[in-house]
Image (cartoon, rainbow, N blue to C red; front, side, top):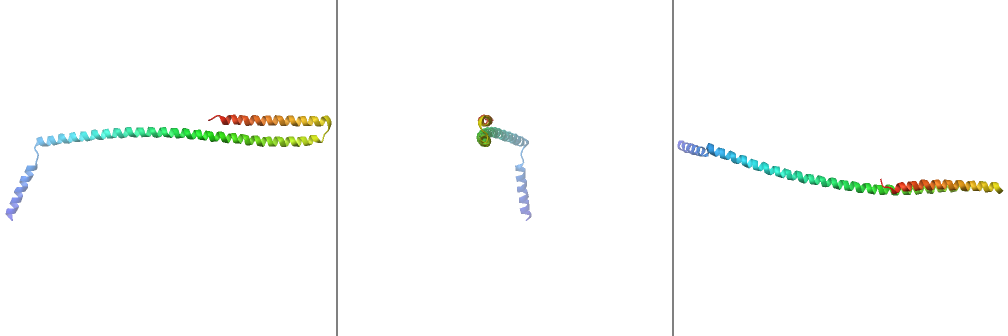
Length: 152
Protein backbone atom coordinates (compact mmCIF):
# COMPACT_ATOMS: atom_id res chain seq x y z
CA UNK A 1 0.00 0.00 0.00
CA UNK A 2 2.85 2.30 0.81
CA UNK A 3 4.17 1.55 -2.59
CA UNK A 4 0.99 2.66 -4.26
CA UNK A 5 0.99 5.84 -2.25
CA UNK A 6 4.58 6.52 -3.22
CA UNK A 7 3.83 5.99 -6.91
CA UNK A 8 0.82 8.19 -6.62
CA UNK A 9 2.78 10.93 -4.88
CA UNK A 10 5.54 10.83 -7.50
CA UNK A 11 3.00 10.97 -10.33
CA UNK A 12 1.24 13.91 -8.73
CA UNK A 13 4.53 15.74 -8.22
CA UNK A 14 5.50 15.20 -11.84
CA UNK A 15 2.12 16.35 -13.07
CA UNK A 16 2.11 19.43 -10.87
CA UNK A 17 5.62 20.32 -11.78
CA UNK A 18 4.92 19.92 -15.48
CA UNK A 19 1.84 22.19 -15.33
CA UNK A 20 3.60 25.23 -13.99
CA UNK A 21 4.34 27.89 -16.64
CA UNK A 22 7.48 29.85 -16.95
CA UNK A 23 7.27 33.62 -16.48
CA UNK A 24 7.78 34.05 -20.21
CA UNK A 25 4.82 31.74 -20.99
CA UNK A 26 2.67 33.58 -18.46
CA UNK A 27 3.56 36.96 -19.99
CA UNK A 28 2.77 35.59 -23.43
CA UNK A 29 -0.59 34.24 -22.24
CA UNK A 30 -1.43 37.56 -20.55
CA UNK A 31 -0.52 39.49 -23.71
CA UNK A 32 -2.67 37.13 -25.79
CA UNK A 33 -5.60 37.49 -23.36
CA UNK A 34 -5.28 41.29 -23.49
CA UNK A 35 -5.21 41.18 -27.28
CA UNK A 36 -8.24 38.87 -27.41
CA UNK A 37 -10.08 41.07 -24.90
CA UNK A 38 -9.28 44.25 -26.86
CA UNK A 39 -10.47 42.61 -30.06
CA UNK A 40 -13.69 41.45 -28.40
CA UNK A 41 -14.29 44.97 -27.01
CA UNK A 42 -13.67 46.49 -30.45
CA UNK A 43 -16.13 44.07 -32.05
CA UNK A 44 -18.69 44.79 -29.33
CA UNK A 45 -18.17 48.55 -29.84
CA UNK A 46 -18.71 48.16 -33.60
CA UNK A 47 -21.87 46.13 -32.96
CA UNK A 48 -23.10 48.75 -30.49
CA UNK A 49 -22.39 51.57 -32.97
CA UNK A 50 -24.27 49.68 -35.69
CA UNK A 51 -27.14 49.05 -33.29
CA UNK A 52 -27.26 52.72 -32.28
CA UNK A 53 -27.21 53.84 -35.89
CA UNK A 54 -29.93 51.36 -36.82
CA UNK A 55 -32.02 52.43 -33.83
CA UNK A 56 -31.54 56.07 -34.79
CA UNK A 57 -32.75 55.36 -38.32
CA UNK A 58 -35.76 53.48 -36.98
CA UNK A 59 -36.65 56.31 -34.60
CA UNK A 60 -36.31 58.88 -37.39
CA UNK A 61 -38.50 56.74 -39.64
CA UNK A 62 -41.10 56.31 -36.90
CA UNK A 63 -41.11 60.06 -36.26
CA UNK A 64 -41.61 60.69 -39.98
CA UNK A 65 -44.46 58.16 -40.07
CA UNK A 66 -46.01 59.80 -37.02
CA UNK A 67 -45.72 63.25 -38.57
CA UNK A 68 -47.31 62.05 -41.81
CA UNK A 69 -50.08 60.25 -39.92
CA UNK A 70 -50.68 63.32 -37.78
CA UNK A 71 -50.77 65.52 -40.86
CA UNK A 72 -53.21 63.14 -42.56
CA UNK A 73 -55.37 63.04 -39.44
CA UNK A 74 -55.37 66.84 -39.22
CA UNK A 75 -56.36 67.04 -42.87
CA UNK A 76 -59.24 64.61 -42.36
CA UNK A 77 -60.30 66.41 -39.21
CA UNK A 78 -60.24 69.72 -41.09
CA UNK A 79 -62.39 68.24 -43.85
CA UNK A 80 -64.91 66.87 -41.35
CA UNK A 81 -65.01 70.18 -39.49
CA UNK A 82 -65.55 72.08 -42.74
CA UNK A 83 -68.35 69.76 -43.77
CA UNK A 84 -69.98 70.00 -40.35
CA UNK A 85 -69.67 73.78 -40.37
CA UNK A 86 -71.23 73.98 -43.84
CA UNK A 87 -74.12 71.72 -42.86
CA UNK A 88 -74.67 73.67 -39.65
CA UNK A 89 -74.62 76.97 -41.57
CA UNK A 90 -77.22 75.67 -44.00
CA UNK A 91 -79.40 74.29 -41.20
CA UNK A 92 -79.19 77.61 -39.33
CA UNK A 93 -80.12 79.45 -42.54
CA UNK A 94 -83.07 77.14 -43.17
CA UNK A 95 -84.29 77.71 -39.61
CA UNK A 96 -83.87 81.49 -39.89
CA UNK A 97 -85.65 81.49 -43.27
CA UNK A 98 -88.59 79.58 -41.85
CA UNK A 99 -88.82 81.98 -38.92
CA UNK A 100 -88.57 85.01 -41.23
CA UNK A 101 -91.25 83.67 -43.55
CA UNK A 102 -93.45 82.86 -40.54
CA UNK A 103 -93.11 86.41 -39.18
CA UNK A 104 -93.83 87.80 -42.65
CA UNK A 105 -96.98 85.70 -42.96
CA UNK A 106 -98.20 86.90 -39.56
CA UNK A 107 -97.49 90.51 -40.54
CA UNK A 108 -99.27 90.02 -43.88
CA UNK A 109 -102.31 88.66 -42.11
CA UNK A 110 -102.35 91.73 -39.86
CA UNK A 111 -102.04 93.94 -42.93
CA UNK A 112 -105.05 92.21 -44.50
CA UNK A 113 -107.17 93.67 -41.72
CA UNK A 114 -106.36 97.11 -43.17
CA UNK A 115 -107.42 98.69 -46.43
CA UNK A 116 -106.17 101.17 -48.96
CA UNK A 117 -102.90 103.00 -48.52
CA UNK A 118 -102.49 101.77 -44.92
CA UNK A 119 -102.62 98.18 -46.11
CA UNK A 120 -100.13 98.92 -48.91
CA UNK A 121 -97.73 100.59 -46.47
CA UNK A 122 -98.13 97.73 -44.00
CA UNK A 123 -97.38 95.12 -46.70
CA UNK A 124 -94.45 97.17 -47.97
CA UNK A 125 -92.99 97.42 -44.45
CA UNK A 126 -93.48 93.67 -43.83
CA UNK A 127 -91.86 92.86 -47.16
CA UNK A 128 -88.93 95.20 -46.45
CA UNK A 129 -88.45 93.61 -43.02
CA UNK A 130 -88.54 90.12 -44.59
CA UNK A 131 -86.02 91.17 -47.26
CA UNK A 132 -83.65 92.70 -44.67
CA UNK A 133 -83.91 89.70 -42.37
CA UNK A 134 -83.31 87.28 -45.26
CA UNK A 135 -80.30 89.34 -46.41
CA UNK A 136 -78.86 89.18 -42.88
CA UNK A 137 -79.47 85.41 -42.72
CA UNK A 138 -77.81 84.94 -46.13
CA UNK A 139 -74.82 87.03 -44.98
CA UNK A 140 -74.43 84.94 -41.79
CA UNK A 141 -74.68 81.70 -43.77
CA UNK A 142 -72.21 82.85 -46.43
CA UNK A 143 -69.74 84.06 -43.81
CA UNK A 144 -69.87 80.66 -42.13
CA UNK A 145 -69.60 78.83 -45.46
CA UNK A 146 -66.56 80.92 -46.35
CA UNK A 147 -64.96 80.03 -43.01
CA UNK A 148 -65.79 76.37 -43.63
CA UNK A 149 -63.94 76.45 -46.97
CA UNK A 150 -60.74 77.66 -45.30
CA UNK A 151 -58.71 74.83 -43.81
CA UNK A 152 -57.25 75.36 -40.33
